[in-house]
Image 1: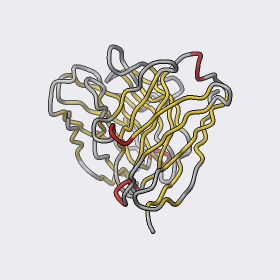
Image 2: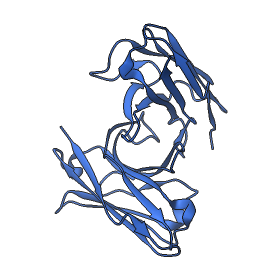
Image 3: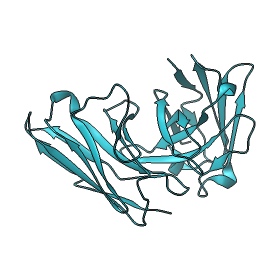
Image 4: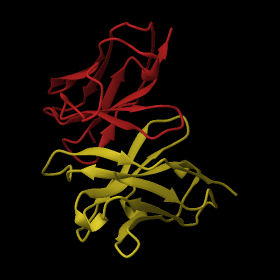
Amino acid sequence: QVQLLESGPGLVKPSETLSLTCGVSGYLISDGYYWGWVRQAPGKGLEWIGHFYYGEEPYFNPSLKSRITLSGDTSRNQLSLKMISVTAADSAVFFCARFRGNCVTTSCQIDSWGQGLLVTVST
Amino acid sequence: DIQMTQSPSSLSASVGDRVTITCQASHDIHRNLNWYHQKPGKAPNLLIYDGVDLETGVTSRFSGDGMGTEFTFTISSLQPEDIGTYYCQQYSRLPLTFGGGTKVQIK
């Protein structure tokens, strides 16, 4: 059974870059499925950030596209998210996730989630 | 973006009650809709996909219906472990968008 676990700083200063990683166990990210991120501001709903198939161009939320980089590292079997120029509005629990399908030409569901990592943007 | 509107935003019901949540899409999304359940402090869990299909391992007390712009999620007999927030999510068009959530509590 696949397991995902986010890691990274819990506190980031405004205007700086947020860098998160997600370790994946039980499944190789290069073997299939799409992989990505969803965030949830405190007390709020869910927001899709983006997802990708290993070796292909990612799909991004247009509202975040200019600030986001998504990648996968097969040597460590992990995902990475970088978000530049963060503000307080970016404070959220960040979930890494496995997507079943690409959501563009096929059906898609998020069938596995990490436990989530709270990131606060503050001085 | 496709806006997803859930109602009610919260509800309180008794154990054994039938509970129905509605999700309305701002555009026709065919049946391209999923439902998730999130318990406090936890990640969401996939319940229903493609509008009506029950995810493997999920209780048959849950069901989904609808097509186009109107969708429903039903719990046939509410149980204490069903408390939490339920979200619909469309995948008809990027960006993927979620409903605002329906918080379910036990009366």
